Length: 458
Image (cartoon, rainbow, N blue to C red):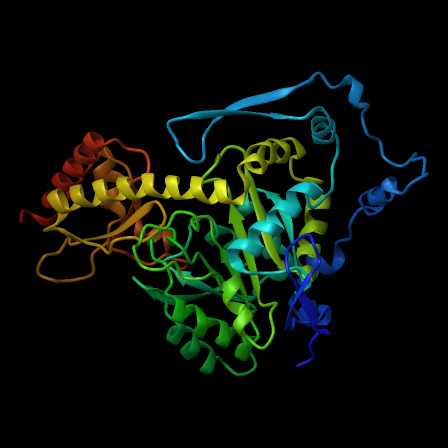
């Protein structure tokens, strides 16, 4: 396989010093067969292509139809936020006048330069990835915005895709709209089962193109709460190389890890162990830790694919919000990476307590009529309802949860909505992030009444 000329890894995201270790990465040409007809036909608008030239010294620009900043009514933006070191204390922050001027105007398609530099530094610190390894970042309107664009850039109508099952319900309709063959990969409490992938691909029908992508949520998988074990991730990376597929690592729950065991490294980090990098496209989100409504996410991955996502952004929403980025920077830059990681640990500890309260209530109210595994990350319990105590026939939670439980004053999601091919399921997804303890007990009491009635008693 052709490999791009290896480039020394940088010692940091900014100083350009080398560590002496060389990382080989896949060449741009490797990705051409992965791109969809949409990507091949779509081009960045001429204005967006030329905007960076406005920064050329001495150039007078007549290029873009930008509004005059003096007419924008905002003159300052400041805020109060919790301290990253003590969530009971507050700190103040503000967007400086020069940064505010930049934030209120049209900005780069991939996001503000300062924002991307900060994100590159974060990925270097957390996932051990350096510049000079063939990757870069781009900012999106939440990570789902970027995942959606990546899918459009990489899949044609009718393509096969490997998708963990159960899967995040927000992506199933996207793949369905492209009439994709959603090939379900088995999972359990340890995450995606690589043996399932191997069997599927080793026995793939002759003459049918193999899947180009694996879609997975590796931490706190939505809905199952599973976190894929490190050795399984390594095996899947080997399979990606053997069968030439890309891994879409959708990871909004990365910073919410509750286990006492060592955190599994990301696919993005682990691919450094492979002969070459470039098969992982990683999606991160601040929605679960800073604000869901700010819609701030970012992607990291092979430059050729990130470039293609930016083409889609330039043709759809032009750019992510520069104002949101400026506010995020005004928050996290004073924190530094140490403060950011301290804050995320405090957030994770908060949700771990919520999880433990919910599981204690589960044992109390549903322990004899349901089964589950304790999630190590995320916001959900994936609970199997024992609706037929004598094992006579397949249980299905759909009507019980969608109709009967709702009529009894509790709402959740039946398992069938998380199965790519929509078959029956005895499972139900329960979110534990919001409810106070007394409401948790009341909700599970109501659900127990419905289950017991459905079973015809205990």
